[in-house]
Length: 404
Image (cartoon, rainbow, N blue to C red; front, side, top):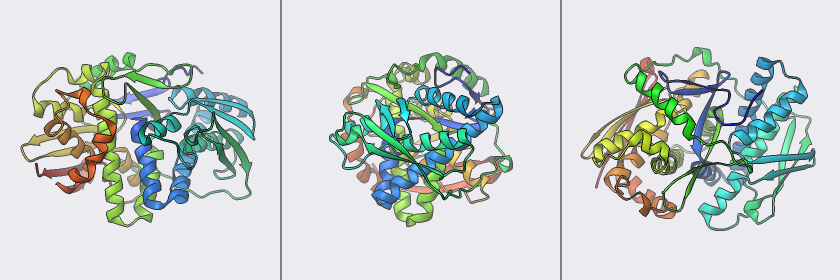
């Protein structure tokens, strides 16, 4: 099985805006967003509980992915393991070197390096929880054991100042029960408007997404200040959806709303705005100097990342935004739960202020990570959100009113 780039094995449906690997939904995010997503979960639920949720979310998502690949291609245990090792690097997560169950090295961990870049210093705890979960899910699928039977611990981490990330696998007697989503019950809404344009754009974007380098990093050169290169990775959407659901279940609603709005805000600024300064953004956004048109085009970048299909109407004091088939909603619908997502709040806020406040279409090189993130509390306090979900069209909507 050939796996060299992040688009190998991936199918794209322009009508639904969904990327899949053998039917398993996947999505692209930049690793700065991934940092703020996991950091926010640890912040709201506490370090230990937050790390465990991120780890478990990655474990079950990758267990289901590799179980599907194993069945689809008739792989044996060894074959599944070898596919997983190549898959890890191809998705921009780094490189794994395995000498034994108690001697696993993670080379150039993107999460560890991103943590150091964003936090401007070392961490007191290991941070590669997504990678730990990946290894656990892969080995459990390869060995046909239930999730939770293997536990991967990180003993050293680059983010702590160690020379390399070290992991080891423990065997446990207990398995872990997870909800089993039934995606057959989810009715995806086909957005016909712009269908041909989305299909054509994706065919033009694909050659612009670089393969991972020798250290397993997918880096898209960007003019965005403090970034230089956008580090992106591709993960199963269930990782984000399960973790988000657990936060909503465990945290009080106001805290969950804040953290998940922050995650959507960080996603747009560090996935969208940084990509806008790359060849991919230049293709999708062009050189428009019109604020409203820039905001619309920036928002529509989500159509190609596996989030769903985006639509936005801009006005002077805010915007009305909509995502069809958003992956968090699909996961909740598959579990027969009411869709609740604050991601779109943050995404709409960031898109709007990127054009209106920061005017990034004119001054893309003038914005640093710290400046953008320090602005969030002020911007969040000036925003009013009215959210709704349209079951008949699988559409999450938000009406943002912003006080300039």
